[in-house]
Length: 381
Ligand code: IPM
Ligand code: MG
Image 1 (cartoon, rainbow, N blue to C red):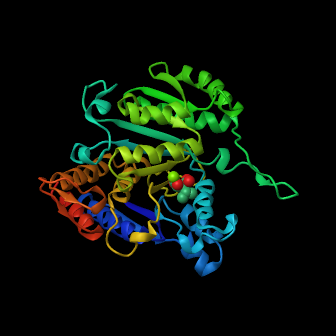
Image 2: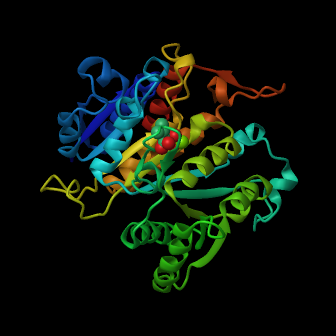
């Protein structure tokens, strides 16, 4: 089967990690008989330099013509002084909103090979882990195209006040809750709704909508936590969580926190999905695809850009999510995950996941060598 994949390598380390990931994707294609056709699209800082805008209209149109989007990272210090509407991050928000990808799935699990890189003690990890193991495996479902990121914002006439608005409609809450409940159904069947319902009216509305929606998922255990408590519970007993669903801003913050527990932000992949019947889905008549946007959760890391130092695994694991969620290629997705596991088993580490302690048989490698190792592991599966 042929799939068209829009590529936005972006800024900073983006081109390096996306380069490694597409080579891995091609290896999967060779092994399982698929062809991935890449369409390179301009967005972010590079687009500002070349066109004056972070997301030219033709870029969004080009992405919509494809089956899925793989993005590296956007932004960098060069563009930091531009006004808000011209910053590279606007390009990212424009893509998310333009594609209608309202649910952002950010899995965070502690791999045994990276146990040393997690800052928590064994007893902390074991607390509330039902299997009594020093590990955790959770999924944050972040609402992605509403809330404070997209609400009314502005300044007062006298310039002495600024405001942003947290606003959610029933429809927006319900659809992301359903994605989260569906994800929980395929996992350990626990959903924790994180909000600030002791203060925010919008959070109280989330709970009201959740009370209705939860009736459709009787086998899922629903719980609620205030976000301050959730931030604490994540570092106190992360094993208690299965799926967390939350608003755009809270999800942004909690996913960075969770990434540290996995050892490195360079490990966390993400998938952003819309409705299965959204206008951007199922472009090809010969196959069923669901438009999704796939990106590592890390940023453009300008300090290490171009130095072959970036960890490509988050982007590589994002392509696994693309195969699973957009193309329904479960076997191929699992092959990438297995390959990453084997490469870590073999002791290969980029700098961010290297053990600083002694006595481990590790080999520190760069972005390219890590990508090549995953590719070879796929060939040998
Ligand atoms: C993320 C990032 C973005 C966000 C930034 C770069 C706009 O932090 O994807 O988590 O806040 O959504
Ligand atoms: Mg973030």
